[in-house]
Amino acid sequence: MKKDEIISALKTISVPGEGQNMVESGAVTNVQVFGDEVEVDITINNPSLQAKKKTEVSILQTIHEKVYEKAKIKVNLKVVAPEQEKPQIKGKPIAGIKNIIAVASGKGGVGKSTITANLAVSLSQMGFEVGILDADIYGPSIPIMFDVENEKPLAVNVDGKSKMKPVSNYGLKILSIGFFTKPDQAVIWRGPMASKALNQMIFDAHWGELDFLLVDLPPGTGDIHLSILQSLPITGAVVVSTPQTIALADARKGIAMFQQESIDVPVLGVVENMAYFTPEELPDNKYYIFGKDGAKNLAEDMDIELLGQVPIVQSVREAGDIGRPAAFQSDTLIAKSFKTLTQNTVTQLVKRNEDLPPTEAVKITTMAGCAPVQSNKS
Image (cartoon, rainbow, N blue to C red; front, top):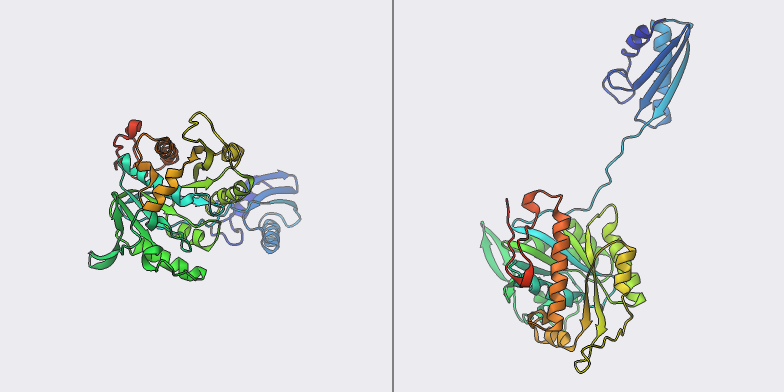
């Protein structure tokens, strides 16, 4: 028996499920002949017992029939199953919107909407075009924070289709379920109804050209979060927490949600809200009411960035109540905190976009002093 004869014989058969013969397909990796003994090394992709048995029997029969009927044959069969891509939850891009940032929290009451509102204002002050989608279906607060709770989105005609025009204030575009409900009306919807309402606000809206769309998610991890992730191509997520242990435990779950293999949304970083309190009469003192550096330690543990530590300041609550976010209070401690938070967020976003095509990346030219920052397409 000669090796060439064995290979020629194997060219007449194929592995189950493959079109080419087993030699041309690369399934046969080695053939050795020792007198009347033949050893065949073969690799197949099908792990089923039936496929393995059929492959081995075909090799034995073919060599016996075409080469030598008394050959002693040993088949070394190896199964290498191809890696199957796990389905990812990814949304469809929206024309004109370059970056979508989800602002999330593991639990309620940590100031997620406050961070969203002031992050939006600071981004706008840096020269970006910014929109806010208030996806907190059961507790929409963005309309109050921007003094537009009595406004209603208008209908506009875009390419022959009727679209919702977001409400505008302070140069920001806003959509919220709060525009469609009465102030004393509770939203009692099951997940599918809430998801449908969100999809209408996303895809039936005329957002125009935006550098950033901030999505204020409800607390926790659930239907609404999955609906948003399925509907929108989220560029990155910002997770808000206060320093105490209970809030951090939930924030950790929120981070884990975005990092799941089927979701895989980059977490730009963590914001520590209500980090400390400094009285006006004691400007050098810091009182850590909810604990010290909790979110900072969480960021280090999970190897993500700490985007900022925002202090407890009475004017933040007052500003939210009257509908003019505290980031407008120039040269104050709180405005500087929000400015730092925003600059760090943009920096992390640029790093996250480095591997994307230029058309998807925000190009930062300067960030000093909130000077206008360009966002270019190339």
